[in-house]
Length: 389
Figure 1 (spheres, rainbow, N blue to C red):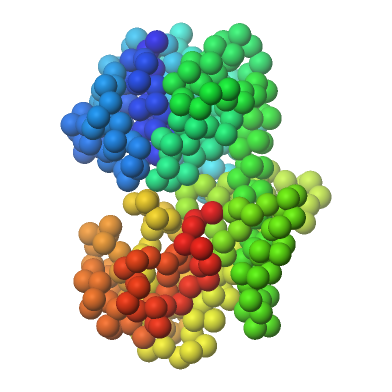
Figure 2 (cartoon, rainbow, N blue to C red):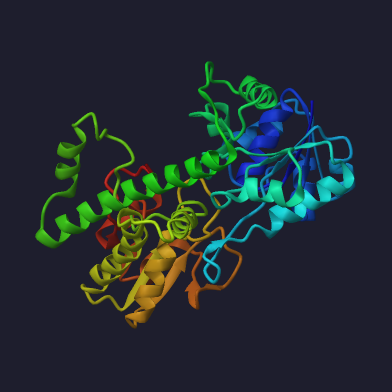
């Protein structure tokens, strides 16, 4: 089959590589450097499985910036372009998705379009009605940054927003490219699929917020967070997973998805969704105040990245900590070898690790690392296990 994947971030590139094991895939992106890297079998993003597959697997994959080349013969077009949350409109900015759809209908109106980008609840059906078309389906992704291809090879589930034979065929084609056998497939409707995406991610954010507020309580009262969490999570209904305290949930998905779900609740009674959104900022304020309580002259931030194995620091929780620290009048320096800049948020970046550790009075680390093993007496963290989950 012939697939075109639009966007080569974590969602797009992981889907492209997954499908290219068995099908002809064209990856379309506006970034010439990304396209060039993919055609040289190099990953433009940090993901071990993607890097390994590009280097060692025989894939039917080419990348291009030419939309005509990408769309002309495509049977399926997957859209994986960014939909950032617009704080003015209180909705995702879906212009990139709509632009792709316009191009596809102009060049190849018979292609089946699958939206992978996260969109507001009701978006797909409203767009189909506006354009008077039927060949658009929403299918959510549930991937971790840095583990995107792995999560496609071993998917928790495949959800397609249409109950039809073509949806069943699409789900089976995707499942056949996975390593995991007997993948759960759920065929539903577009609007329900959009809601599944937002509610699933908001539940994960809620779980992060819950254990972070548990940790806040323990810190204030001088209690052992690890002992409390262990006792709580021995209940199988709670489970011993996704419970490691952090500086807050961050990254590309959870902050914007929780805000979008809250916006979708306009004129609908709720307390919990608002609490999940508010809790994240409260946690960051608490962490910043806790850091400055020891009166450090220079606070060193160890890494801006969202999580280990990722090269992305969009909306990472540590950025909120930095902003709060600056408001409190604290001098902040940052160690982030993935950044080519000399500063971030008006804070100096020091990419000599030893110089960074020597200059900082306290080193703030969302997650512990072997690199910090010689300076643990300076490290401030709420990390219990070194795990992101």
